[in-house]
Length: 396
Image (cartoon, rainbow, N blue to C red):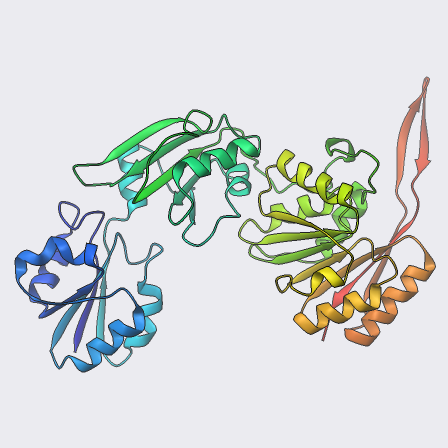
């Protein structure tokens, strides 16, 4: 049968394209969520109310008609159910008809260009707001669930970005449409609910991925820290992807967590340390650097790793003598994980190599000997740092 998958725009009315209108008129059956079907009751066609891909596919296979239309909100290629539905319709003659997405409509309403905008859905997600705003001049958020506009604004304020400009839109294209603009701080108590979207404008957004951040920029107190140059090399060895789940074991100040967080704005960092002072400091540095994709947990490893989300990448900066058990639980959770270990003693180096030989491949070993300059009077002196080994590789 002929199946049209149609993006009906923001309201199914004025934003509906002529092509979509013709396809809806041709269809013998209309399928979609109740809100999608409502504008087309006037056609007096048979309808099936569902937004679940498998139920839609089953209905199309059993209806015995020659033409049907599945109605999708906005555009079929923008956070749409179309992606999951298409693989289920291989037996049909399918045509996808694009529509006007909420992002396109809202950007047009505000006169903002969107070619370099970062698009993020918060339907079922909540941990990647501040870090994306920190790294992008413009972000578009599709709000949903518990993440309302005021909650997003409060998140930005909590991570030091209360001065970021925000635009909030709700019920776009309808008579009840709302458009509000102000700073995140000013909008933190707004009461916009329902079908809402948000655009952020951060004029101080980073134009690079921070690496080897100066040690002095972190809150330190008396907690151990992986120093800038070593941190830079160790993080690079993990080849962190944009959506990676990273474990930082023995997180200390959280300096590794922060640099890793910038590399996975769609992922998350799970930081662990036996010291509550360390995990509290990691949380403070996460807020200082705008990284809300970092979560810190106090506990002894590997005991506290048992229920943790499966990692793609693991950094071990401190194991408290439990290196082999940590390797064992990582291997059990994900035999394909990548691991990087830092060691300042030959005993730790030997232990790490043995763990890789048992659970993974032959590791790469790098030894760094960093020397920094220090001004003493009129002279510039050299001050050597302790040598550090970086042992890295994959499991198998």
